Length: 323
Ligand SMILES: [Zn+2]
Ligand SMILES: [Zn+2]
Image (cartoon, rainbow, N blue to C red):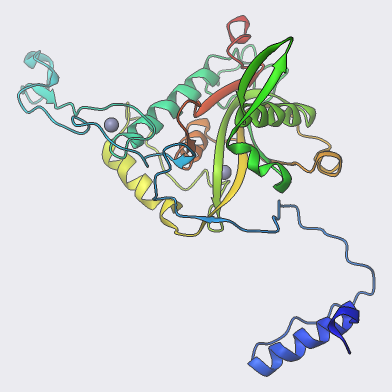
C-alpha cells in the first residue's frame, strides 16, 4: 500500500491500528453505511489560531480591560464624598456618606472596565425599556413584548473562515476620483447586519467578539443572581461576577462573531449558511436583557477607533427617536 493511493478506509484502518497500539480506544466504526453528511452547526475553521488575550495589541483587538489605566483610576478621595445630611430622616440618625473612586469609564481600562460594562449594560437595558410595550400590559420591563416585535431575543452571527481576516486592516477604495480608506471591520459588521436582517432580525444592539474559547457559555443568562430591589450596581457583586467569568481560561482562539440582542424571528438559517457560509444562531428569548448584555460585554472586543456597542435596524440611532 502506498500512502498516496490509499483509500479513506485504509487510512482509517491505519489510524485505528495506531490508536490501539498506543493504548487509545479507537472510535467505534459507525454502523450506518450512508455517506457522511455534516450535521454539526458551528463554524469549524481549518486552523485554530490561539491568542494570548492578556497581551495587549495596541493596534488590534483586545478583550475589555486589557489596556492601560489612568493615574487616578480607582483613586479614592477620603476627604470627599456623596451623601445626605438630613439626619432627621435617617432611622439611625447618622450622616450617610459614600466615597467615590475615580473612574474613567473606558472599556480598555483594567481598573474601570467592570463599571464601564455595568453602565453600558444598564444603558442597553434602558433603551429596551423605552420601546413602547403592548397596550394595557402591566409589564413595562426591557424583556416585555413590544407590539409587532415580540420579546427581545439573543442571536449570534458567526463569520466564516474565509472572511475572518476582515477584522483587521483597511481597504483603499476609489469613488468618483476620490480615494477613501475604510476599515475592513466596518464592512464586515455591515455584512453581519445584512445577514442578521436576512435571517429575520429586526433590530437591536450588536456586540462584537473577536475571540472564543471552548469553555465559554454563550447562553449563560441565569447564572448570576441579581437583586432587583437594590438600586445601582453593587461593586462587590460586580467584581465577584467578573472573577467568575471564563475570561481566565487561557486557550482563546480567533473566532470572530457578532452578538445581537433585539427583536425579530429567525428563519432560514440553514439556507443562509449554505449560500453565504455565515452561521446565524438563535439563542432565544431573554430572561434579562441586562444580564445578557453584561455577560456579552465582559468578553467583548475593544479596538481603538471602533465602538464596542452599536445599534442597528429598528433600534438604530437614526430611527430610534420615531419609536
Ligand atoms: Zn480607568
Ligand atoms: Zn461571543
